[in-house]
Length: 314
Image (cartoon, rainbow, N blue to C red; front, side, top):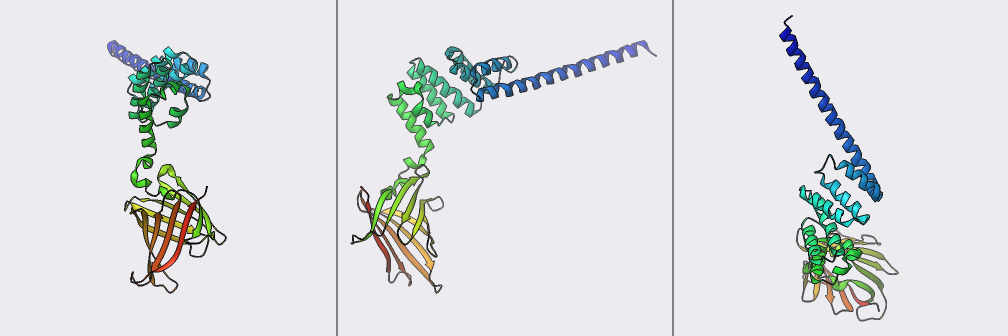
């Protein structure tokens, strides 16, 4: 056999085996890094900051572009009181183009560190950038001791208002606030009498996007949810009462001339179509009149179904 050919084959096999061995070694290192990340994360979630720090540091020797790990190493150092290192870790997390949630987290944590150093403007700038990246943690804004020094700062207050508006958009929407006059605890009387007909508690719920009515009387109980229909952009009430045929919807609600006015329709016992008007009159801070009437002849004549006055409980 040709010696040169054998030598060439041998070199090829050697190079092939070397390449395979290198690939196996690299995969093993990657697997080891993944395993270390899992261990580091478990220590992090257990708030074992000292050992989490050690584990993340060992991982970051080989995976230095891991923004999540840098952010978590920074938070471990922060909780250990190693603030300068923590700040460097957060900066490294930001340097590797992290996903928005990681960016928001790192920036908000940097804000805490700058606030601790009485570097208020840097803290405000970090928070502003964090909000732009998706930070909406009102609970932290309101409770973290690091932000105590900032809470009287007008810029901090504006940032909190910004987060509040993002978190609860309905609370800042005048259209969604139109029915708030009905919110509260009420004693309910037939209009013009002093005979108690029932009681109602109306709550602003779902971050200001709806009102929940809770009605009780000796004859019935019921609830309604009131909200702006996204299809029509008008108010809608969906009512469920304890009595027979107690399910009803009132639609196309509009607030005009100090009254919320709904319309509705239904079929009577004989199957005839009826239309109705359901009106809530805003009669001041402590009184609401609720008026319901129906027509069986397309609005030519009207019959009062009920007429109640709500008096706010003291």
